[in-house]
Each structure stands twice: as structure tokens, then as C-alpha cells.
Length: 184
Image 1 (cartoon, one colour):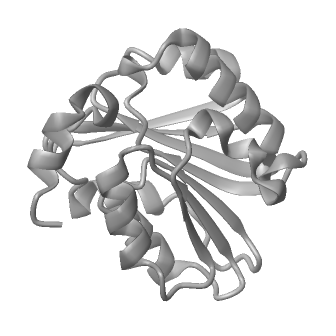
Image 2 (image 1 turned 45 degrees about the vertical axis):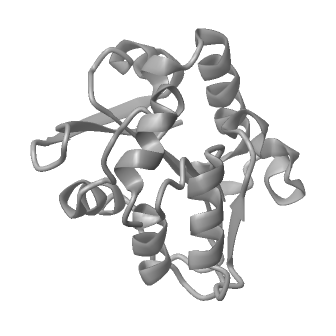
């Protein structure tokens, strides 16, 4: 997407960034995923231009499913076109707070991996609580919630909601990012 900056700057309060994730950040995000497991269900919050979506699709098994949620109309249409040939990738123009309205994601323990690019510092605490509560309900016992942020201000929050939280960092992203890997 050649106009990522102009699209994201128009809706900065929703996107929370002006650049796509770097390949270094993406590598750090997906290294926590065991792609050898068959029939996994992935949920991505914040498709953006699909750079993380693309990397997941390159590694996931053919029988795996990826549901990716994006509320920015320009990013949604771009990603929808970009991944239209992939039967196992569903790009949805829907808020992450409503991911459980998708029938396949509504039952308990239905999701293996959540990957979130949501700008949590821009969301209300009520929306964050709602999303995390639903993630906890939908996450399989051995599943992971992977979130990246540009600050550590949500670390104590994640530690209060998940049994284990591992944090890593990459300076090779603009801006530099913290990666949280959370498990129940």
C-alpha cells in the first residue's frame, strides 16, 4: 500500500501509527507461534495493510483459518482485495470488540492465537476490558494473546489478566515496540 501514511494520518486516533509494522517486529511477533499445529484458528486485530496477515498466511497450515478485523475502511478494502484469493483468510470490517459475533469464534476455547495491533493507549478502558474478557473466553488453554505496543503502560494490566506475560522489545521498528505474549 503506497499511501499507508496518508491513510493512517487521517485516522490516527484509530490506527495509532503512521507506518506499517517492520519485518523485524513481524518476525518477533510470529516467532511465538507454533505453526506446525494443524487446524489452528488465528484472530488478528488491526489488519492495516496486511503485512502481519501476509506473514501468518505464509506459515500457517492450509487447514488453518485466519480472521482479521479492521475498522479503517481504506485498509479494509485494500486487505480484502489483497487476500481475496485465500479461502482460509477472512478480512472483516468489524471492531475487535465484536469479534465474538462471528459464529466460529463465539464458543469457548475456539481460538489458538490472537495477534493484536490495536493501539490500546487510544482505547477506553471499558473497550480494553471487554476485548480482553472475550479473548480469555475464546482462547484455548494452550493459546496465546500476542499484543505489541509502543509503551509499557499496559504491562501491569496484562499481568493482572493473564497467568504468564513475556515481554520482548525491538528497536527496529518505527516507533520501537514492546511485544507482549500472554497465556492463561
